[in-house]
Amino acid sequence: MRVMIVGTMHPQLSAATTIAAARGAKVTHCVDTATALNALCDGKGADMIMVDVHEDIASFIHALRSERIAAPVIACGAVHDKEAAVNAIRAGAKEYIPLPPDEDLIAAVLESYAQEQHSVLFRSDVMKSIITMADQVAKSDASVLITGDSGTGKEVIAHYLHAQSRRTERPFISVNCAAIPENLLESELFGHEKGAFTGALNRRVGKFEEADRGTLLLDEISEMDLRLQAKLLRALQEREIDRVGGTKPVKIDIRVIATSNRNMLDAIRKGTFREDLYYRLNVIHLMLPPLRERGEDTLVLAEHFIQKYSQNNGIKARLLTDAAKDKLLAYHWPGNVRELENTMHRAVLMARGDEIDHDALQLVSATLIPFPQPAPKTAPINDEDDDSPDVGNLVGRTVAEVEKELILQTLDHCLGNRTHAANILGISIRTLRNKLRLYEGIDFHPTMMHE
Image (cartoon, rainbow, N blue to C red):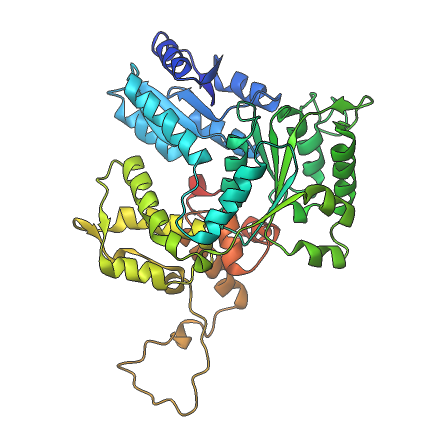
């Protein structure tokens, strides 16, 4: 694991560096967040960033998101500085480690994040066959295409392949092709030279170079435009890339894994995806089933998420009641594992008593705005027993108003995860992003918004 430690709280952070290195982490140190951001943008990889709580963590996390750097931020500070700890968590830090550092605590945090990246939990036969195939091909450098509905765990499988490969000690770099605007994706992947375009004030290393000798995950590859697909195909064939504005090709040594939630053959027939690129990526194909087709995994995953979020929130882990288990198993999970994780996160926080009962499980069908459906003409009318949607709440409102409320409630249910929300709403991530731009100024948990 690559750990970046940011700040000047010596000797406490020096001690944290020593502990992390002793546990096998590859540690780099930056004196402040500005230096750290420059290093990360220049290609210095990090799987975890530990930051002095007296740094401007909120601005740093905002800058990381703007640069699409997904490494979790862990705040570090004095054990008695509770206000700083709370502010850091509100700003988006994943954990708070008190200083001087406790060796066992740092080891536990490192182990937790390493396991989260590399582990796959399952009990179903269908997932067992997929993991068996993944084990067979992990040691090779063959390209792998992973397909399946949004939220089925495609990135988890990609991490698993990397962890089992010969490149496991090298970087794992992920690029979400759907989340990055088309005009920025080329620079993001291939990098650019200083002066290559307006705003290119410095040379920037792209994700291909950052992943050198490691693994590059091209998430939602089907969303890439045709012009960039051609450049990607050449990079894969020639094992070299051209930076935007560059004059010399740069050799690369990477393994490529691609994912998509679309039918790739349909995309080829429609002319939105190159057939030659498809076959270049599809040396090995792993197709993940939706969660509703692997019901044996539901409770295993639910219990894992209970443990995870209980620990993260300092809450004693509680067991599910039989009624809660029945409710989880009966639900169809349109958002798949990602929706299950969000549901269990919420349940950990909302449950009362010594167990997690069915009333703590707020499923999407019960939280989204209900659109009125015409009742059958023969249906009897009983105002007292009628729990159908209240049409009066919708009449007189514009479609735009109802749409806005639907989108915001869905995001709230998904704990700010735009990809999951877009999947439930049946729209693309780009459409959702454009809608949210229209809603600027709304106070909607900005620190929780992510893709």
